[in-house]
Amino acid sequence: MNRETRAVGISDMNLYVPNLQMDLERIVERRAQEDPSLRRHFERAIRVTGQKSIRFPENWQDTATMAAQAALDLMRGSREIVPGSLRHLAVGTESGLDHSKPVSAYVQGMLQRAGIAVPASLSSFQSQHACAGGTMALLGVSGLLAAAGRPADSALVIASDVARYQSRSTAEVTQGAGAVALHVQSSPRLLELDLGGIGYHSQDVDDFFRPLGSSVPKVNGGYSMRCYEQSLEAAFKDHCARTGQEPARALSEIDFFVLHTPFHDMPEMALQKLAASQLGFDPGQTRAFLEERGFYESIAPLARIGNMYTASMYAALAFLLEDRLRVMGEAIVGKRILLASYGSGNTMIVFSARIAEGAPEVIGRWNLDRVRSDSRSASLEEYEGWLDGAHGTAGLSPVLDRSSLPADTFFLAGIRNDGYREYGKTDAPQSWIHQAETSMAGEPVAAIA
Image 1 (cartoon, rainbow, N blue to C red):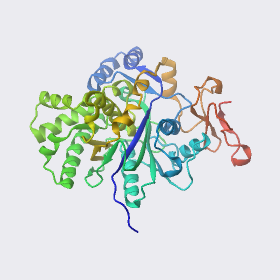
Image 2 (image 1 turned 180 degrees about the vertical axis):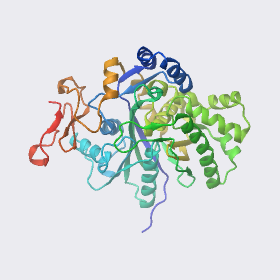
Image 3 (image 1 turned 90 degrees about the vertical axis):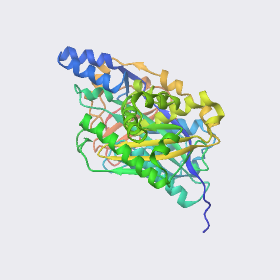
Image 4 (image 1 turned 180 degrees about the horizontal axis):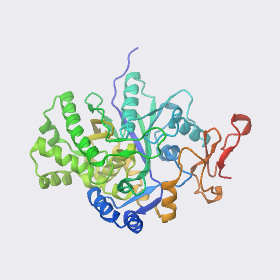
């Protein structure tokens, strides 16, 4: 069979962030009241990270509901997505919900019950390598679409995560949550990916991990930052070897940079090291170099959203594209972006993309101001309840009335006695929770009536 060779990449994307927000100064004050010796540790953590606040989910939200919400909003807002053309549905996450069932399966069911004609004739899977899982899903699906050579096929790739750490640890300042949904296809309208020039660096380290049965990760923050910086340089050099470029020239000729952003200042720290080693830049020169390329506009909103794990790099990508369109207009077409996706434990993936001809029209439809402004200041009781909640392993607490939920919203309806998760959607035209005749395990432990 003759297969057409076409560029593959991202045609559209959508960012979803939960609206509960907690200013970090309030967390510092709470921890200092509990133990005055903690104040200096938390204040130093805020200085090092550059974080200002975090977003976190309601007790009826989880990785799957956020993924489904991001996907539903993307499919409703896009003019190009034909649900029946979907060949792959992949979710990258490090806050999975089941040791066997992928988040993608839950998302497929939620979308179908919301009236989206997602076909059964597709591959559904979950990709995991800490914060790089979303990128692995994107590149894997892109390779499958390129190999198939069928222009009508497309894919939905979603990066969705909840970053939640041990209370009273300084890692609290780098929590967050959110999801980004990507529509992937050949002849993409937003970004064309260079699948032949991907650079990798992976090694077995213990900078960050979450043991089975633990709801929070184990973190060695300083070591993880060094791993990030070292692996960025190694993967960038591998990328250059694959593309036949000299590293210094390749770095100087990049138009825009997008990096995984576990906290606001981490990408700049890593690029400072890379620019010093490859270009001989001092910190001031690197900052001017990055300012010229709109880098700081890509990470500024994340200082108030927090760490979205697998979705963090793609959120930064959305904010960068929005800003560069505002500044440059149609001139952004053809510009090249270097993307660096880090996953603790660890792996670094460096790849490039070209901004496609349809990008200005696609970006012009976005409304990222809604993401920035759609927040509610949470109470300390809500925040502590989220920290202490047994997310993913037990029933919902406290149980909420369905009437209190926002309209047109996916929610975790209950967790059955056998641990199976059941989902619902407000304002649904049909019953959302599986009926007794289709359930083999009885009533949920807790449900929102």
